[in-house]
Structures are given as structure tokens and as C-alpha cells.
Image 1: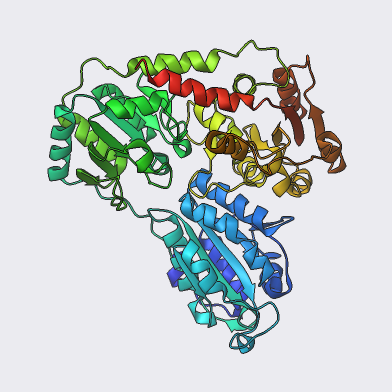
Image 2: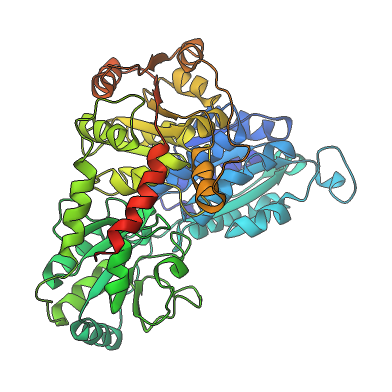
Length: 555
């Protein structure tokens, strides 16, 4: 870093220009957003900035892009909107980032402060509107507060646990003269755990007969995935991960059990039923509610994280080890007696068999298992899949094998439909060397389909893989399970191939006898934006539910 920013001489500029300088000092390289009248000064200030502004086709798309950027990089993604409807369009993406603990800073224009005290055109109290879905929500009322406001927003958004921050900038404040310099940021470090809690944790694990680890996304955020793998291997304890923590332990690792969260009896669920100690590491209860995996409320729970556990009747923590996660795992392992044998290991073998059962299927429409097998086979292990929300999410979480963290991103805190396409664009911008696939249902795809134009305009060669069943498949799955019949879940679709081509993208439709693997490889080689329409047979959903129940009995 050149000069210490605190010692630089203040330079007169507009408030908007000072905001941009502060964003530059935070290391912001990209802002996603939609232009509007009340953010004109910020947009003009960006013309002289090193920051790239990417116009999106909807503010929700901008927020989802900032959301995924934050999750992949650990640095706050930034999105920009105007007042009123522009700002309200940000809400879903901002809430998703906040609940999924992805660092994000949202900025919105606002009417002049002279209009805020009364009923006025497009005026809403945005600060209060964003307060429940952010860690920090504020309004800039004087130019001199900008450096502190920007620094605080980024500090809180990126601190544990990460989340969203919101800044409102009234248009008359934005154009005022300002003097100031950005504030310096200092990277913080999580303290280590106390010796007392390390000793107590080691004793708890050593005395357990059947411990199991539940790993959450916090392990990935902390960069502690390698420490987790070493911990599990050294102590011979199996690891189940949440949807949001796929790849936290390599699937090839002998202790990896796969994902938990199907809300039905599964191999992994059986593992929790047999456990006498559940070691929750970097786990947030929004990822998979504890009443689903700990209904009896009678197991010992060891909570290892950098922040205290949320209070929940089904998450009655026996002991908390707080501090740097990786360091905690290393210190606990040194004092813990390794377990001999592992009664839960057969669960892993059953899951591996289940994953490969449909590898050679030739039926059409494709079964979800075959679709996932072909996707995994066509991609490199470091490539990235961004999952939308729907029935396909459940199948991906269960059967898509991951060897590295952040290679299959699943929103499962807020779990909003529509994230996959804009999220894939952000992922490709952040990781241009990797193939990026947006795995989406036909419902979720059409919620933000307009961002196909953004992808083509930016020349971000993503692949959109549409699981096409002509309806809201996950809701139908649940309706039939609960009521024995569907209700209001079917809809019509456009010709996705022609739709893709109208945006300037390549379009493919998988027909009977075609190989999805071959089409995927052609799409990857094309280095263009591609949309692949895949008819899927979701009758497998109900078969999975029935089969899971059958599997539990003999165990």
C-alpha cells in the first residue's frame, strides 16, 4: 500500500466522489447495479474511477451478483440502485446475502433530504426497510461522515459472521462539496480458543462412543477446510456437511458422509440417530434446522466456531469452543484420543453406490441422478456450479460430488429462487479461469432470465443448465408427500433454445438419444454463453422419498 491514507491531504470534491474514493480504498473492483436519477452523481464519479460498473437488467440480479461475489471471495460485493422501486428490488438479494452470511454492501440513492419528512414521489424510509435484513443500515446526512460510514459498512459486512450492510445517499448530499480521505482498514485475526475449552472438548470427544461431525459453511468462510479434513482423519470421525458447505471435506476423504438436509430419513440422518456426540463446526442453524437432525434433544453437542451458538431448544450446546476454527481443531486433535473403527462407515458405501446407479442410463427424459452424473463427469473438479432453488437443489446437494470448497454453491439460508443465472455471472467474473454452470429449474431461470443479456454483453461464457419439468417441481414433491395430490404448480414455458438465441447465446435442447455429456463438452469448448434445456423426470422425487424410508429400517 503506498501512503497511509490517514496522512493524505484532504482534497475538495463532491460527496459522491468521496464515496467512490472510499470504495476504491476498500479494494472494490466491481459494482453491479442499475442507473437511476437519484444515483446520477455516483455514476458520474465512477467515470474517473478504477472501479468497473456493470449495468444489470434488474436490481435483484445486481444484488445476487454481489452476494455470490462476496461468498466466493470473502470480500464484500457491492450493488447499487436508485430510490424507491430500485431499492426495493434489491431486497431479496440483500436478504439472501445476509442470511447466507455472504459479505455485501448495498448503496441506494434517495430523494433530497428536504423531501424526506413528508409524503413524496418514490420516497420510502429505506434505512428502516433494510434494517431487519442487514447488519448495518444507515443514511449519509453530511459529507464529512462518508469515510466513517463506508469503513463501518465494510468492516461489519466482512466481520464474523459476514452479512449485508446498506447505505442510503440522498441526492442533495451526493452533490455537495466534501473534504476527507478514506480511512485505513486493518485486517483482524480471530483469537485462539482457551486452553480450558480445548481440554474439555478433547475429553468430551475421547469419551464419546459414536461421534459425528456436522460441518457448516463457517468452516469454508474461515479457510479451515484442510484443518477439518485432518481433524476427521486423525480422530477417525465421520463428517456430514450442510448444503452450503459442500466441498468442505473432499468426497474422496474416507470420513466424508455427504450432505445432510433432505428433510427425510437418509443415510446421513441415520448417522445422527446413532451418534451420542454431535460436533458442530462452523455451523449456523439457518443451514439446516436442528429440530430435523436432533428431534430427541438428548445428544451432547460440541459447538466449535468463531462466534457463540444461536439459542435453540434443539441445539442445546454442551460445550462451546470459540475462536479461530482451524486453530481450535488443531489444538483439540492434539489432546484427543482417536476413535477405533467406525460403525457409520457403511453409510458412505451405500451413498457411493446410490450415486453411480444411473451412470449408464439411456432413458429420456433424463432422471436427476443421470443428469448429475453427466454434469460431474463433464466438469473439472475445480469448476463451479451455482444452484438455484427447487427440486434440482435437493438432488445436487445429495449426489453432486465435490472435492473442493466453493465448487457447488447452494443458497440454503434464505434459499431464494432466481439466484443461479446472476450468481453464475458473478462467479465467472471472480473466477474467469473456471467453467461456471448455473443449475436451475425452469421456474427459477425465468425469474431473472433478463440477465442473459448481461452475460452476453460482458462476454462471460457461462452455461445455464435448465432442469425442465414444466412446473414447480419441489412444491409438487412436497404436496404429494403431504396431501397425495398436486395443486397449482404447472405452467407453460417458451422455446428455451430460441429464447437463448434471441439474447445472442447458444441454445441446446436434449432430445431422446442425445448425450448430455457431449453437449456439455461442446458448450464448454465454445467459450460462449450457452443455455441447455434438459427435460427431467421428476417422478424420481417420490421414488427417492420412498427409498429413503426403506433404507432406514435395516439400519
